[in-house]
Image (cartoon, rainbow, N blue to C red; front, side, top):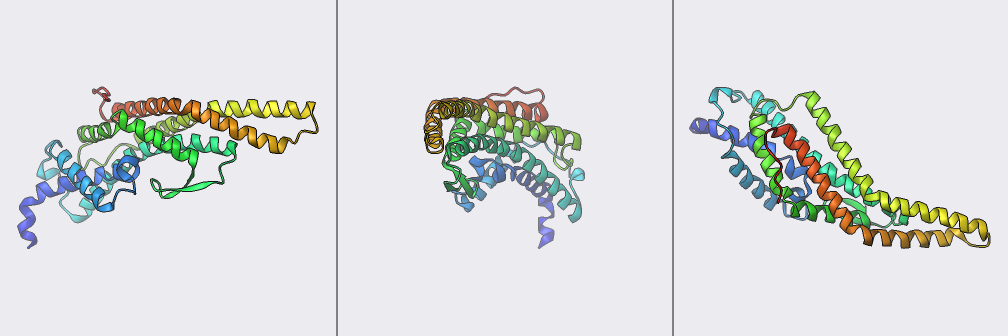
Length: 267
């Protein structure tokens, strides 16, 4: 029975390697890994995208394919680690934007009001979920889901199938760049509100010094809540702009790594 599959080996192995490289975006990128979408739908979507990408993969000679089971397992592990690296970089940016929302909710006193977030299968605050959905809408509006597929297609030219992935120096520099972009996005999301909280706290301290009979604890919590709500309403459009700029910067990093001669085209 297995002897009948031998002629299909040059086609089946590249398809498996393409599939496992694309697994990374279906694990970490929220649009593709959203757990609210049924698992069978995500599996079928992964197979369909893998078939489409497989048609654009440069032809690999049969002699370059792994010929033994251990070699095949090592090749699959390398492809999966490369895909997980790309997916983790994009997922870290979403997490950074959520971190900015979490810092705002802490200052507002809403950090204890946790809700279940089906996107990450974890609990998060309301402000974090607002920041996440704004980032996801910005990601889709700028064509980020298409750019991710485009990057994965071009990655097979820079990092051929079975090549073992990127060098450790390249991986470390890429991961550090992704972390820097994530924390930069978190700072830009949270900084205006944190400045407003600082001014409100400073004002409350001056008021307590001039009027000692004022109950600063009860008044301060209310002031922080009102300031936080005002900054969220004023900053929703700014969060979308920060998300778009951060994703564009991340795609530039990935394109410089995997598509050095291609430009970033987002719609």
